[in-house]
Length: 289
Image 1 (cartoon, rainbow, N blue to C red):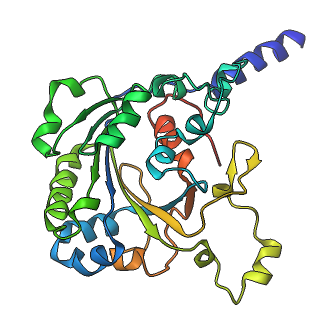
Image 2: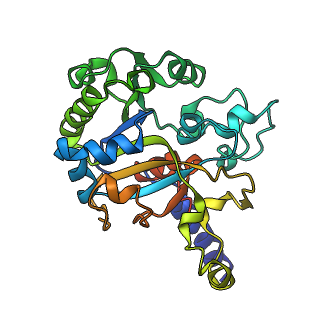
C-alpha cells in the first residue's frame, strides 16, 4: 500500500509538469499599437479581411495593472520591470512569479523562444533587455521568411502606428497581408492596444448591485493566488484568436467589439497572456481553469 501511494504521487507529479507537444505547432502573432477604435469601426468594411478575422475568431479583452506598460504586460514582463532587486529563487516552478530582475524571457517561460519583428525602437530595447530574438525593421510579410526565424516560436510582428495617424490605410492593408501570411499557422493571435474602455461595461449598472452577490471573483482580477487591486479600469487591449480548436463567439465586426458587447473570451489580465501561449506550446502547465 505504501509503495502504491509513493508511485501514485510520482505519477501525479509527472502528469502535472508541462509535456512537450508531439507535433510542431506554429503560432503567429500580430500586435498593433495606436490604431484608434473609431477608425477600425468606421473603416473595417473597406478591408473585409479585418471583419472576417472577428467573425471567424474569439475575442478577449486584456486589462493591465495600473502604471504598467501594455506591451510589457502582454509579454509577461510587468512584474520583472517592477522588481527593484533580485529575488532569491527557491522553487523553479515559481520562476514566473518570483521574478529575478536578471532573468531573461526564455528562462521565465521555461524555454519558449519567440522571434519579434518590430518597427519601434523603444520596443526593440525591451526585447533586447530580456534577450528576446528580434529585428528592428519596416515590417512586411516577405521579411518574415528570414532564416533567422528558424527554431523560434511564436513568430511575432509588432507594429507601432501612433505616428501614422494621418494615414492608417497602409497599416490596415499590411494587417490584412499579415493575416493571410499566417493562414497556415496552428493559431493566430491579433492584438490591438490600447483602447479607451471601462470595466464598468462588464456588468450593466442596473443589475450590478444584485449580481455582485452571486457572481464570483473573476480571474482577470487575480495573479497567482493573490488579488490584483490596481487594475487599470479605463483602458483595454483586444486580442482575436483564430485557428485550431478555437471557439468562435458572436462578434461579427469591430463595431461589435467596441459597442460594449461581451466578448467570447471575456477579460484576461494581460500578464497571463504569454502563459497561455506557453501552455499551448507545451512549455508550462495550465495556469487557470
